Length: 262
Image (cartoon, rainbow, N blue to C red):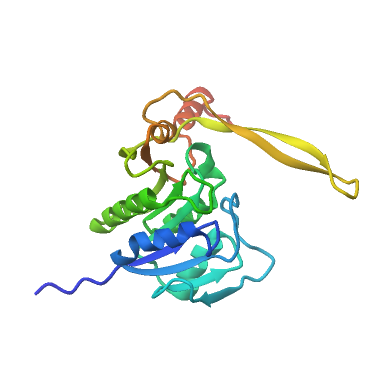
């Protein structure tokens, strides 16, 4: 007789805050796939990257805002939420961790700034298969129907088979109707960046301040990138690793720089 399989535990977090529509839609998309635990920031933490809280206490309170779901709000960053969830609530690794659904893109270079993806990355560092989900719509009342279907599909697949250690996906969903959605593509991260500038302004007290503005610049013409997929109605899945070693440059240095003789 086969032993009864345990229900998987799915850790859910985000960077837009626990009251954001995106996290509620993510929970709705996956709640039937396992036991969901939510630990998310008590306020928006977009652009926090992999920041952690040092030098001040972290607060965490249980909240009753998702029917039938155990949930906690945390005063810290998305990465803090993952650390507290595994260390203080579960006392073990969940089966998978999902982060999002973020309001706005985290494709290309955005992954480096994203609190959504940093939460998923932190889980992956701890050996928890993880995925971050982002919808290319900043609107509070965005339509999450396509994003929910993508999230359900990806999480279901992650649970069907044992994922490799440190498995991590960056999943972005285009702002399209269900009719216009073309499917999912596996992609590489596009070579793109933000062209930024700062507007100099003066506040009512006569003091200077600066407001960052800019636009997204993509010069990558490849048809296998996340930017291309999203521009053409597809959701993009980019497998991600947190080891930033550039092996090509490492090999070049070993060959061309040789032994320093120090």
